Amino acid sequence: MTIKFKPNRTVAIKTGQPVELSVVATSDPCCPHQFAWQLNGTNLTETQLQQPPFSYSVYGESARLRIDANTTDDVLKALGTYRCIVYHHVYEDPLMVDVIVHLEHVSPEAEPVQQAAFNLWWLGIVFGILVLIIVGVVIFLMVHYNFPRQAYFRKDYLSLALRPIE
Image 1: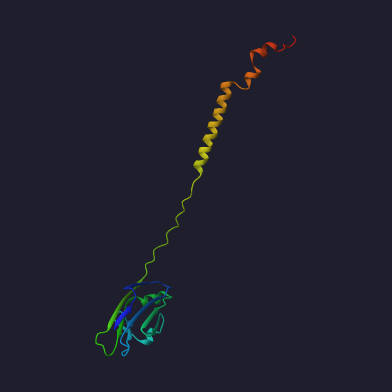
Image 2 (image 1 turned 90 degrees about the vertical axis):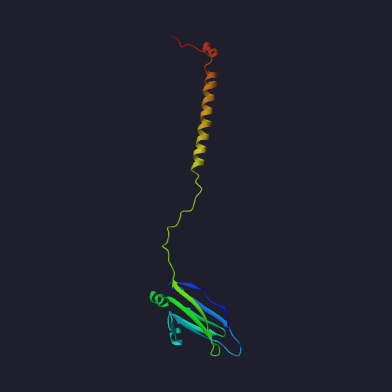
């Protein structure tokens, strides 16, 4: 006899999520093997394997034990060390598969992290500084060249100006 497939050594269980323990074994065609299950060292009978939270089925070379833990009580009943014993009446040494079913650790929900955004406030500052520089240059040029006053207040025009009648 050999075991072709077995579940992980430890399996986490959580309320509302089923857990499936499957074992696949092969043996001589003349001597078909059988499966037996234990929970914490106690044999589980066919009747117990068909009652909630368990559901059990055997198909040829595979045995499937499904644990539907829909309530907290079901979860607590299902915790422990499971042992699948693959045996045959002819063979002296049975094969055993041990699986530890433990309660899944549920971490507290963390607050969602705000997604990083591309801040555009600095673009406003850069454009504002550019506008101030351009306005400053225009004012400087107007004062420096005295434009448009230079055309209206030249001394030439002041001599031509009419004086009011006194």
